[in-house]
Image (cartoon, rainbow over all chains, first blue to last red; front, side):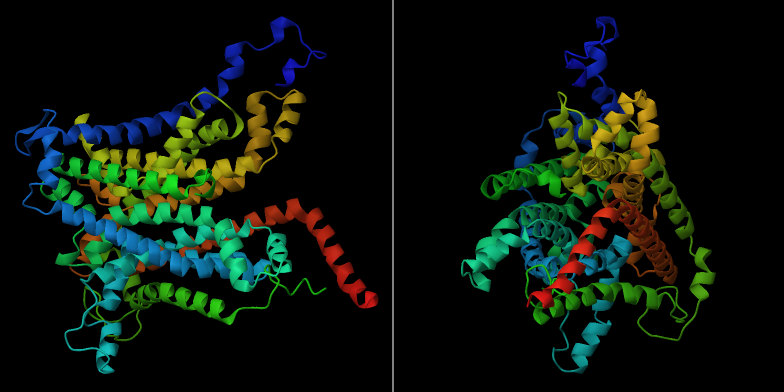
Length: 305
Length: 294
């Protein structure tokens, strides 16, 4: 507020009014904020409303505040939605853990073990698969890992696996595909966190007679917690809701909640069921993330995304 | 002091870490290589097969042979261009509000941007369809655009805001003190400094839009975009032309990203030239002086 300086005080009439001084951020954010409010936030809430409607695709749906649908779907349902839900959460958890295990050494390598000028190119290589369309690169794995594909044929010819061995259609294929698709989302935030660590702290730790393992476990790992946190957030949420990987790489036994939402909405046109499933998914993910943030949280998640 | 050959943790290279890194990178390259390779496969089938029958550019010369594929690709391009331009136009002012001012409701807006990026696509897609149905808006190209702009604005805000926070607002204050109005300050000072960020945000938004399957699948109605076409075709086997389009997108994207990187680097070098010179001089001195000191 430079205009408040008493010495340089301008005549009262030339000083902008309170509204003139305080309104810029509002009109700046009017259209962008309004758009997100109208087409992101309000739809999220309207999803809840649609889930409470009853009816059928032919006669249309009407709001009847049918809260019982949640009980019908998850407790007394012919279709095991609870199983799909738990399976998706399991895929999400397994993918997240595997992503950390694979991404951490990669991020560590780039942050600490290479010279400054190689960092950008090495990070770029991690991102390279993003230049291939998501559906194509997932389907390429289906192509490579199929029963007549390169990998299985080679393994079979080497007699390393039996005739009935297959990869596609298994949970492991889905988890593998998810890890592949989300790896960069874990590497990048961890790298950013590691890069922020002051090298002098590591020197200090060594000067105080820490061995390599202690430096890592007691200095580097705790300081990179925020990066892991951001990575977990991105990877877990993306994986739990994803319908594509489980559909292209999985089979009957890998049906996920994402596929259930898509099928009930687009194939069966059970709008209320789909909306209820997606609302439930959002609430469960929100709760898990809230608890996770409370337990391991850092303040500035937004800075890392 | 051999600081130039040293890495940041002050120790020698680690073969295990570097081996691991390259192994993972190698695995992530496998689908890319297979895609590029099989887009040139001379197998006379309209679905991709493993049998390698020699090299051909036939599929590239007959890109438009597959029903609906080119149309879907053009639709995707249109959606990506329009949604990234619109999201930059409406997202940049929003980032300036969030990056340059303190105001009531700022926390709410930031959280909404964060939630937009963090929310699972399947939930956003289903919710958007519910919304469009409840306001009786027919799904199609228009609803795809609305939904794509809604998620792209968030990406634009994240990128542009990061750039703004690294920019010294004193320059803008100086322009204002020299008598420039808000509009002049923006067009003559802020905008030129923001260009690299706007370009990066535009590329990111374009990439997010052209690659989106999940949200689009809900709000597309009977409109078919490239990812929707590929997903539909994947169930029965991809036509080789899909791999051609994938290969073209891959290399064009790669070129754009590299060009952007070069531009950015030039920009950074121009800005940091003096600093770098100073550091280089100091390091050079240390190298020269060190033996003498011993």
